[in-house]
Image (cartoon, rainbow, N blue to C red):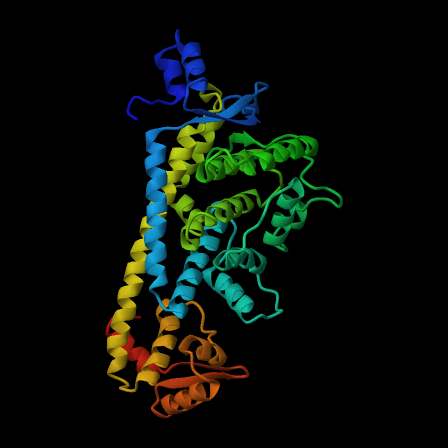
Length: 417
């Protein structure tokens, strides 16, 4: 890998042999050609160049190793996740989902708070018809936990995903006109630090539709490995920039959706957080592919995205290990408050939502499913625990309970909350 350099670098190191080097790389046995074409962007002149380059990558040993590592990490996460109780599992998912939505908004400079996203999750869980900000965005991500993914079989599916994802989130000035599938005017990506144009999206709705039609065909090819295909598709979507606003959030969601088919759902919803942590590396990866001296090579883009997402997986696994430990410790604390096995099970169930501090929406009916007991049994247990000042009823229709301050203070004293 030390000897494998970007073509841009080699163009300066070997100017006389450079044309042969480019041809050699493109025609190498391990070269994979995508039939997807881009126009490079000249950052000095701040314009799209007239030349077209086919995107390609080389099958390197490092890519294979990173791919194996990603799959191995996903198996480890899945195994640890399967050992956690349902309420804890759900709340860990909601916690990471809040991180993901917050991160995808932060990347685009969209102002949002964790509380707003939390309220959107709660509204969906309670099946409320109340309008909440980011509710449509949150709802689409929540489908991953149910193994429901957005299929893209035609260009119109991309527009449908965009509409479902960002309903009511796009400013009026950036909305598409009636009858428009994609934007009709030119757009540029501008570096906020120096106001320089660093990219221009594909020009005209007709060309956008052509580019996305080729992308959809590529996404449905069976001869390209899943991860490489997902990363290349992500690049092409962002490079095309089919909308006036919301391209980044839509592109990252589509990437998450395709990763969720092959990885655990927690790894999939860690994409935006990972990108935000490595925003400079991520943006540089795009610029390198668009550089005319790299001739459409995607190898380093693929490597960069693998590395970014692998680090995210490591963080998720460590967080799961910590969560598992906190749950173990909480049982020790709760055992001091009740010796009754059934009471302890109910207290433990409700302690999980306190520990992860996301959603206090577990109803008594849901407790019957979690504890696998009758409604009468839950009613009896909650009454007894209220009498012991270990529970408080927070809602009557539907009936809901949460831990009392007495229990919460014990968990806090033991550094569990």
